[in-house]
Length: 236
Image (tube, rainbow, N blue to C red; front, side, top):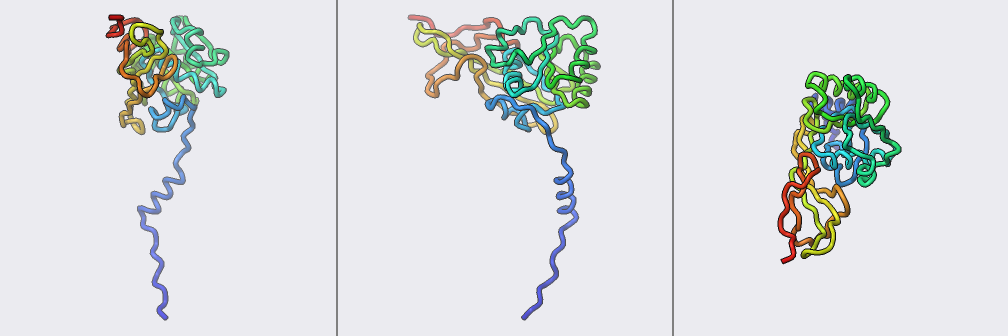
């Protein structure tokens, strides 16, 4: 009978990989709607992260599931973002604090809210680049999620609505029943790989065999409001 040979020892690379896997910090997330989860490499909003959002309707969609799950949100410097639209988007408005007019020191207001709220949305147009980076650092240290509406230099994920359509009018009659949009996510680090998903932001999702949209690009994708172009859909 032959004696067993020496047991191979794990290589240095294997030991290092195992050590890194065991020491990797757990990523804490705040849940989002199931149809938005794939836009983030963590499957949700990473605590401490900054997500720049282009479009008010998309911002409300991001706030819907967190507030329903018990998170608290604050919205700063966005007077046009009303409670009615928020409720229609599924947001629990009793868990949202609105600060439509933060005054001259918007940075101090946002910083204070990041200390106590899970999510803080703010108008990016009110914040200079240097302050934007400081607020993202504040969110990171507090474990909150910063959601600027508009471009943001320190964002790790940026969400844009690239195209949309309303459906439900039929052949010149009926009523609009839903708004479907194409959302693209770009970013850096773990979110460097671009992702595109089609989601329903308003109303109900279209049937799977929808032949063609009656109204396309009816709303400006950059803002989510205001008629931009109407195609087709008239009675002959």
